Length: 80
Image (cartoon, rainbow, N blue to C red):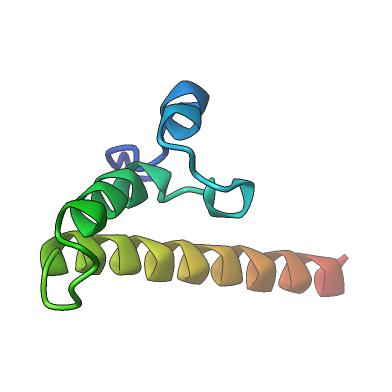
């Protein structure tokens, strides 16, 4: 497994940022600054693009990782 910088915020950080439980996932450390930027810029869609793209890429990468893991487990299950 490769070493990647963590994108998960601590429980205290998530609680302080008032993230809903459904959004407390592997990309929570990227969602916190995105939400701060959105509030500061009045949710204008052309603002905070860098933060939004970083968060969306993290979500996509996490989805692909989970699907790979699921495929690997199913393959191992069929082989056993």
